[in-house]
Amino acid sequence: MDLWNEVYAPFGMVAFPCGNTGVQMTGWFKKEIKSVADLKGLKMRIPGLAGKVYSRLGVDVKLLPGGEIFPALERGVIDAAEFVGPFQDRKLGLQKAAKYYYTTGWHESSTVSELLINKAAWQKLPKDLQAIVANASAACNVISEGWCQRNNAEAMDDLVKKQGVIARPLPDAVINALRAETGKVLAEAIAKDPLTKKVHDSYMAYKTKYDAWSKYSETAYHNKIQS
Image (cartoon, rainbow, N blue to C red):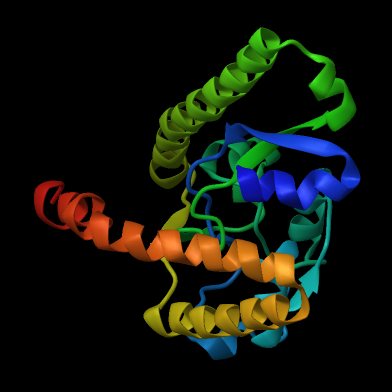
């Protein structure tokens, strides 16, 4: 949170987490992806850092607003598209334009929405109202993540069992290539900007500790108990 607000300080804003999609999906593809070679020349709607990573593997990255994804995918203007997850994707009708639904979103394991407030206005609020806003925002973040888990589970069940969607993970070779290129994209970003490096290093230091903890918790559950 401190780093988040440090990033926004020059813009006179303060930030709070205020929504969470949970894990997102890799996206919809008209054709099966069997190898890295299948990505070359693929026209895909994918924004942000993930778009930069895909472009390094030969993907023709397209930037489209949500409302334009379905018609573009249906008409063949694009060959693949990433949006959010099963519930939101189904509302756009993307399952009617492509049948291969790749999991899990390597680029968005959890996506947080933000509440932005003018810093001058924020500082005028009394401390009790600041606390109410901060806690209400935090509650929205947790509640929305739970909402997505429940609704995505139901939507995925419908997509696979009733709408003929083929859901599968990307091949290991593709994931490894994406991982390698992601490292390069991030390395270039932190080399250009000290604040980006500061955020990156803090995040990765935490991730190292979390990864070790997850071996005792999440990983152990999924590998040993859930199965």
